[in-house]
Image 1 (cartoon, rainbow, N blue to C red):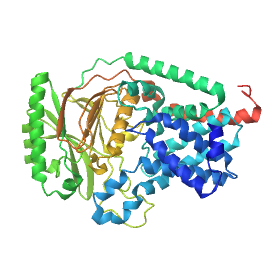
Image 2 (image 1 turned 60 degrees about the vertical axis):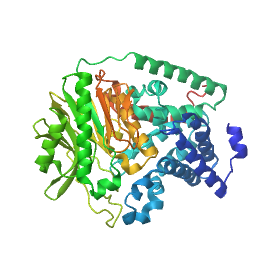
Image 3 (image 1 turned 135 degrees about the horizontal axis):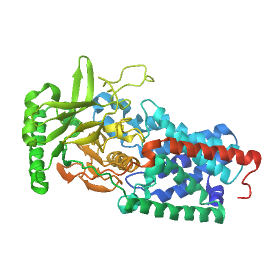
Length: 506
């Protein structure tokens, strides 16, 4: 492979830049929803060799940046859809949406491209490249309010039982550990016969271990509630315009009645929880007693968890509100991790581009109601943060995230977002309920196995008994410190390898 790259990859100039942009874009095929992760064995070595052949560290950094621009622009192409929902206000931003975000995070791929040049050839370089890629990727939580979207480890979330098995090690090392393993194996595969042997052996152990973890879960002896998930399929233009607000509300009420009737028929008189997605209520639910009474009546004695805006003086919040059988507000969760440029304006922009901003809430909570159980509520963006989806010292028995992926259109965006929920289920050992207005709604058990899902762009309901949580996995205790420690150790060993000559016979 390296011989092929040396022979056919341009050595310098604009042609090499174009090739790296293209190869980076091809790498995005490994991401959800396609999950063609074997392509990494072909694309990552191109970046690796281009970085090593660069005459200077500055040019190596540029090559890493160009690869990153191709990778992130292709992986985030759907951001353009979000701009098009308000094209009359932000028409000027249409060409810059995906490339603009890529421009901010692409320099992180320059880090492994530069560092790998400073250690001994062979495995030390591969270790440093994989370790520094992972560390740079993890640092994306520090950009604005954090943007750890599309970690390379999500490439293993192949649909079906195959993906279920491949992602089980995330219960120990998290999605960042999966990223490290993919980069390491993609480059190590080309290190002669020994490289192929070790990658093959590691893959066998990985699959065997994942299969064992998947087929031998240990569940906690708690009962989670029965759910009615309501997907109303309201377009973003209708959500923003509020022209047919009452019609939207009636549609959600009708779906709720239908879902509760089905639940009563299928699962008897057990407690039921109704969930509406983000932006489902077209108003201020905590200020509208009539609407809460209508919801309570449609829910027929069930507790309802409803996405709604909320105001407190001059502050506005994106909230999830629990409405009891009597129509009273039982609890409110305000979204605490906000979307940069969507819900708040980062300091980097010196002029005002948003018509209004959202105030962040106080942080993650655990609700504990007899009919609902111990649930960790989240809104949209918050589910993407590995290791940061449960309230500290107050662990829930299931996770709920409500979202409105109508912003993304029928693109890869909703499926990439959904994949984060599946990964959090494995990492935390908790069932995850992902409820969308227009997108894809789904329920995952505590192994990340998909129980049910809806279709994009459809009015649908899901009626399901929520499975039990697993005994707490290692990752949920130590969180991102595990992949962080492994990546740092790999980087340190790669420098020691050169300095002291240890492991040189390997």
